[in-house]
Length: 70
Image (tube, rainbow, N blue to C red; front, side, top):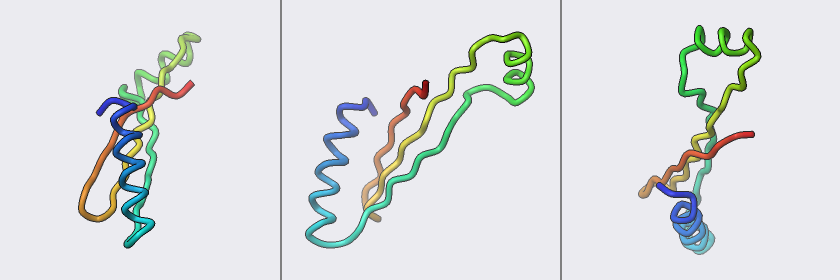
């Protein structure tokens, strides 16, 4: 899901959960490459791009997006 759409749905999910219920937001760093490749890139001095997977749920609906980490 695109970041703008994720934020729109996250905002509406927050509004619903303030009236009743709860919600959870989780983040996980992703490398998109295997560990051996990451070590090889680091030893050569190449920049390693990480992404962050952001997920939110209210128990009924799940939304997620991927964000670049600098």
